[in-house]
Every structure is written in C-alpha cells, then in structure tokens.
Length: 234
Image (cartoon, rainbow, N blue to C red):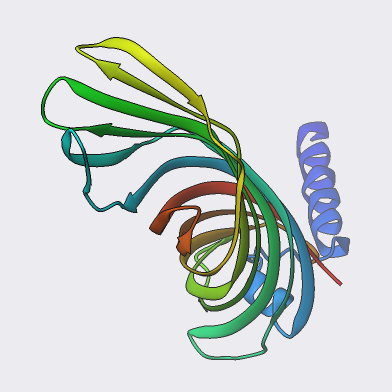
C-alpha cells in the first residue's frame, strides 16, 4: 500500500514539474538575417605566399639573358570598411574599401644560358588601397562563402637592392642598386569564408590574387595572399 502511494506521489510531482516548465524548442542560429543591411569594419593580415611576374629577356655584350622571379614568403596587414546589403535571396551584395601594407624579400635571377649569371635581391614594400565588391551566398550553419574582386592603386618601393654577377659560379662583381619607387594600377580576385560568432562579430579567412600592373621593373606582378581577420558590425 505504501509503495503504491509513494509511486503515485512521484508520478504527480513529475507531471507537475513538466507542466510548470517553459517549453523548449531547438532552433538553429540564422547569421544571414543577423548581418544584412549593416556597415562593418575589419582588421586582417596574413602571408604573401608566392609571387610571379612577366619578365622579358634582355641582351648584353655577353649575350641574351632570361630572368625569373624567385618567390619568397612575405606578410601583409590592413583594415577594411564595408557594407552588407539587405536581401532575402540566396545571395546578396557587399562593398568595401580596404587599405593594407605588403612586404616581401624578392630575388630576380638572370642567366645567359652559359657561364654568366646575375642575381638581384631586395625588399619590396607596397602600400595598397582597393575598392572591392562581393557576392555573399546563403550561409550553411555558421559558415558563409563569398567571392569578389577589386580595383585600386598601389605605391611600391624597392629598398636595399644589390646585384651580384657570377662567372662559372664565382662572384666577380657586386653592385649596390639605387632605391626605386612607383605608383601603379592594381586589381585583385578574392575568395573568402565568414564564420559567424554572434550578432556583431564574425571571423573570416580570405585568399587574394593581387596584381600590380607595372612597377619597379616588374610587369603584371602577381601576389598570392592568404590571410584571416575579424569583422565587427556597427
């Protein structure tokens, strides 16, 4: 008898507890609706992982020289200011202005196909300002991919450059080169991924294929930039 009474009381208490508790509904965050129609700023940086350029052959008293740019890993860092447009479609537009500094140690190797070769090394610095436009796609969970591109201007300068000439692998002459500076047109393609943290913050990673048109003796100077940053919405 006591067991039945105790069991009945437990059933009643459990029923009352669940009846008085608020209902719980599991739902997924929707970062797309939280971040549209708002301005933002961002800070970002990363590695300049590879460079290449169009370098024509040259001739001298000892014959024709072919040249190529020896790639070094550099770094970059900068700021963005942008705006995400409101949309209920599967994708929406965004625009931004970014400014960043880029630095790399570069080497230009030249050879005549014979015993004479030359190597020029120096620090390449670039201050870049770009206007970008994007298509950002509907997010999957907290992840939102996007693609875009931009155009702008860059100021490049070459510092601490020197040239060493070798004959048969033996250095025969080393000459300090003067510094060079140039303004040039720049353009880039961008692919990125936003990771939603909350209503105001996102973490993002981006790849930039950045091209300087013609500067410091390099034509179509391509830089592969891989970086990450944080984005804060106003």
